[in-house]
Image: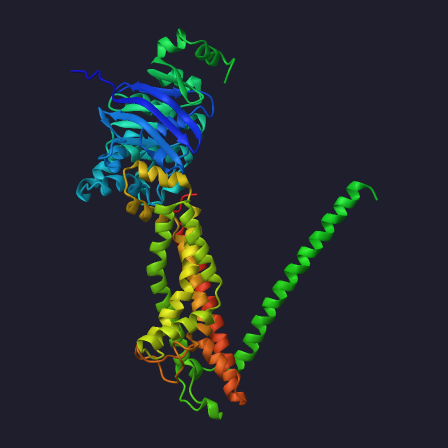
Length: 253
Length: 285
């Protein structure tokens, strides 16, 4: 039985930073086990929208959020919501790789450990997740070494494994390949393309080429509002809005 | 002289001024070290640092060494630093993690900046007043408490600055793993470990060198420190009391104290420097 209901639904989401409105009445549906790309020019609110999905946006000063983000029909901004539980279900792969200040092993083990996994199973868990991001063979001899000793591309794969180790069902990627060299970037893209079998992936990207390569569903943002959203083939080939077409062709951007 | 020549001349002039300032500063430091070492080395002997004073300093019949002051200073500054850290680290972490950039947090930072600037003799007077109020005598404990007050603002503000240097992305990805704020603080502490150690060293250095705060509160004695409730000697006061003596043999003990104090601070700085590599092994840049 395939569950076709949206994994995440955003309803009338508005975000202000001080008096500046960053997101205006956002209504989107994010399909399950697909890659959804949020695209648009710099400053259009892509990252703010992404950060609204795991409430990281609340870390900003003077921020105000109104509206609903429904994760499996539960509003994550609801008063009784446990924010740590929400963030456990929604992983994040940031723009630049940021390992935790600990060993390679502990970078993976940290998340499961704080969520109460017993250490007996930890070795297996670390190995499986490092294998899942194709890092195991490169680091198996130096699991106790500092994670900062890895190359940037390796670090980003480690960060991906770390995010997956807490068993989220959604993965948010904030321009996760923009700090990487083309080869490392391709490695991350390949991993994401495989991961969508088991995870709902939402990615913010600048790079229309990347969106075309990876995305199943596309949301085009312009000045804090959604211009158009739809399945990738449709929105890329037959955009309904003139602004979308103009952005695709590079007339605006 | 055209405009460009003048600009280059200006640069040379200012470079000269800066270099001159650097040489004067380094020269002063060298002169201080030289004086302390030259005066101290003559007074230095094994018994000076391995025995307590036998008393009689004021009569010029100084016998024994300054071990009582060395140990007293280590206990005072060590105890004060531990105590100040016990309060300072939570305060700084709370300021950083829960209060962030709020107005109130900035006012609190301002208060600590002012406290940092207050002369330590004022802390000494405060401690003394408090002791009179509760009927406490000059003692190691009273000295530790007062020195802890002197060190607290240094620790809070330095740790606060160290925490601010942690990249915000690190906090974000940590939160994104579903951590509580307390667990985030653990990560922040690991990331800022080298900075924390530097802050602790700074506070300890201030504590061990301070004479005014312990003058009324810890008192002075020729005996070895043996109880929290009894007075203790300290190196700064050992210098202060014995240098003002008319007897050269007593003065020599002051110079020896100054040398030991300098060496103590130097050794601790060097050890910290050496441990930096290990401490920053995991630090994310």
